[in-house]
Image (cartoon, rainbow, N blue to C red; front, side, top):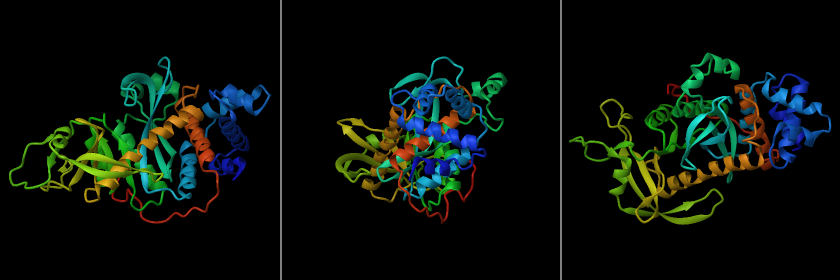
Length: 381
């Protein structure tokens, strides 16, 4: 498929011909411009006309076009290329100087282990083979942003955008994927190892009838599955796993490569996810032993009766989300948005996502969309 045909498909919702023209120009610039993808450099790669830079800046930051409609089209396009029924949620930490860019705040970066002045985006990714594709984004807005009328006005934050903790942003992405895709039994995968209220995410996914594999904080309280006649006191997930012996499992990567690994695992209940007086369904808690006495992230999954190799492979494949974000940062300008507005940030993320998708998945295919969707049971977080 030519870039012109791809662009006209993904950006078909843009009402004006000039908007569609600048979408193609920006997309083309992201694909051919080496190094930093500033608007000036994108414009220079496309044309010697000095007015192009201003036109691109206007298109991204000020022109009224619908991010959701573009990402819905991109979702359909990726899904039509035989995507896997796994929905990965991953973070993009976008360092910024100063405090005027929309959403900028101090956040703890899981990757570097330090606090960073940055924007924090949460993305939804679909997998096609071994590659993950970004098909939606949400920007985290702290209470300091949503409760300040002047900041809201300056950044053009819509009235509909209120404070949502990270777990609520994750559920919103899941709901949007459920509305846009035909996956009948998706598995939601996310690293929430620093989210203190992760139980709200697990509960929300259970209500939506979505299976999940989620990395959780070590202090998450759990109860062992077994004789509940005398209800024991909850223990931390870390303590529960540390009492278990190791089990071997073969972990399979999305590209088919396999490796042997050792895991600690236990079937548990999670307080707060019970059903009436029942302790609720069992969940599998597991972590890979990477060195003697050192474990990797702690994962919990609703796929309790699936084999350890299967759920461990799903968890291990989540590293592909971080790889995709790094690739977007390095080669597609994810970090290079120069504007400060809420609509501009989303427009840039849509264009970057489209460029990445075209580079990795440019061949045509006929989409097939049908079937029951995750989320039919309700939308309450």
